[in-house]
Length: 220
Image 1 (cartoon, rainbow, N blue to C red):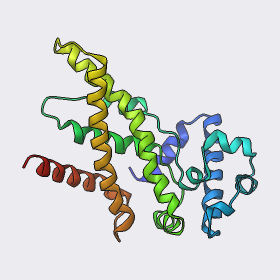
Image 2 (cartoon, rainbow, N blue to C red; image 1 turned 180 degrees about the horizontal axis):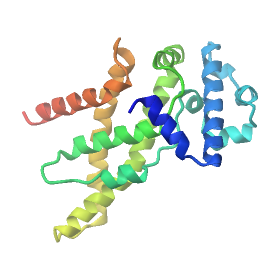
Image 3 (cartoon, rainbow, N blue to C red; image 1 turned 180 degrees about the vertical axis):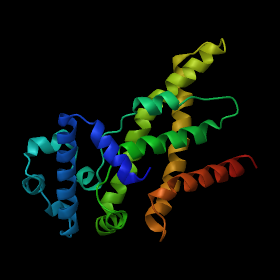
């Protein structure tokens, strides 16, 4: 199934209200990206100018995006959908850090829905370095959401094994795994922004290689 076919299938299953929300989200995102492309500084762009071009109110803007930067990049508040949550668990033999790193990537993707081309996306971050910083900061938001799920799964494993699931111990373990996995994800994402010919489609293979390198370094 092509991306276009997939998008069309999702559009067909959306309710009228959901389609309206999607159109409004896209209108604000495109207006913000267009403004960023035509200004030398993001500080010169106002929310009012973005909403005027998108034909929505400033109040509506903040119902969809937390900041101008998020609107330009197409970043939404991260949420783990049911399919991702249901598919995530730790099995015997799993590398927990790599497993969580790919969970972070999956959640990051659902919270990063741009409607502009990749080359334009990269050009905007080159033009406005604060956008690249915000993109990496967004991983912090993703980590916070993922940490809750990882904690839940680890606690379930300990209970199934008959071990006492002490809350602090489980949370500390989950936080450590998520922190390390987040560092690997950041390391993997960086070349996607700086290496010619690399795109977001390469994220899975780059992240896998990064995890392999991490295991080699830490097991020496």
